[in-house]
Image (spheres, rainbow, N blue to C red):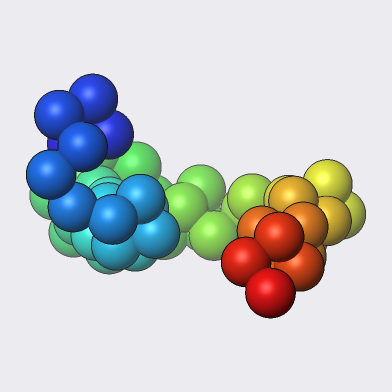
Length: 52
């Protein structure tokens, strides 16, 4: 979905965050593990600042 660029990147990320655990590809704890990393929070904050 990122490659064809049909929808927004944040929407694709949220869809995959919900879809992958429900299909059994990854567990819910694996899906949410990235949010505990400080670097991910920094990158998300940079996206917000760049948009502003």
